[in-house]
Length: 168
Image 1 (cartoon, rainbow, N blue to C red):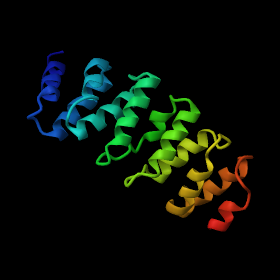
Image 2 (image 1 turned 180 degrees about the vertical axis):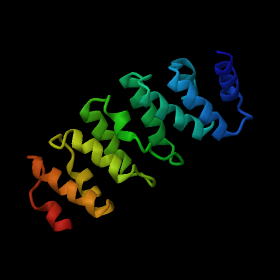
Image 3 (image 1 turned 30 degrees about the horizontal axis):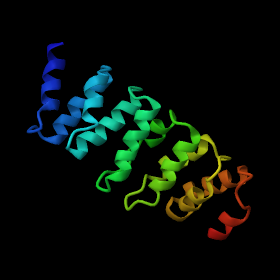
């Protein structure tokens, strides 16, 4: 336990370089230390705050409300990138909340990665509001991601047929 205490002190010391603090946070999260991870959601250092959101979501340390709040914090800070493991974080949210976050995310200067967005859509391609996200995937994703978006659009009764084909 001594080593975990050393990691906690390193994490809480704001004079320690952000990368080292993130490494300490990841280890503590894997050990299930929810308290320190949740505390880092409010740190001033964006890189550490981002890592806290990611770690807490992946390790299952956050409630649905905390995941939503944390992702809104990322959403409101244009300097932070969306987690590459966004689907892992969003799978614990109700489908409509996850889709709303993704819809707002694709409008940001630094949107989520197309493969992460695609994974969120694959969870429920028939949900209301997927049209804009599918069209964004067609426009920004790789050929493979655009093709998968086309397949998903054909599964969605709410999606106007032929729209994706026109975009291609």
